[in-house]
Length: 229
Image 1 (cartoon, rainbow, N blue to C red):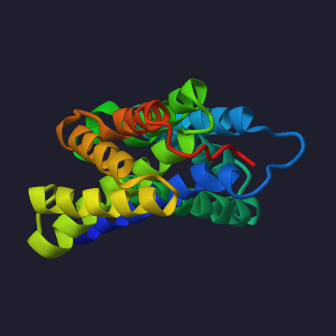
Image 2: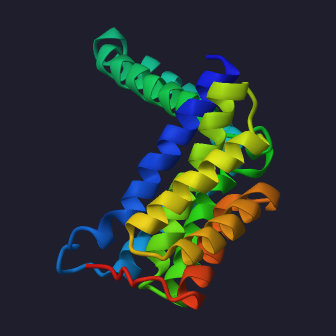
Image 3: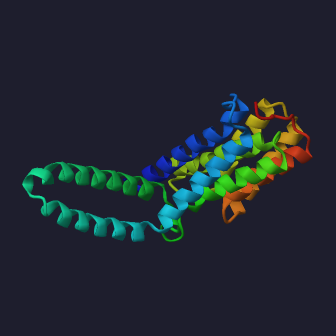
């Protein structure tokens, strides 16, 4: 898979996960859930995935050790018992290979060393936004979904680069249009989209900062409230 294809795949997954964060703003959650629990579970899942990625090589070694022990155990029972255990082992190996492939496609280069921080920071940013103002978190999550993804995808498709000024301008215009569709005034939309896009461009980890900045700015400028259902 080429660099462009890999990055497009990453951004499509990014969009899909962002839509999960937007779900409570369009549809009611089950009675045993509220938006705080929903986001907290997402944060827990992101932290768990990150811990797996960080320790993946240790886990791989432990899995190989377990496989060798399993082989010795199976061999002690003879051929009749060995066959079903062999099928189980092959299924485990195939599942492990599938997970490894998906993680390798989703990871940025530094995440191979430091863990899958993009997802984790995105969930932290979303949870912080929710705690700041649940009725303006919607704009933060939309910014998380649109600004980063549009900037990257347009840069890849038009300029074959990961991040460009042209891609940021396109992202700014897309987010500005979304704010207008949500009922914001032209001035509110322009100020918010400029600040959020600049934040995305200069931030060392945009998944963390973009939703928080967008939530704070839209609340400060009094854009229409969009509370969870």
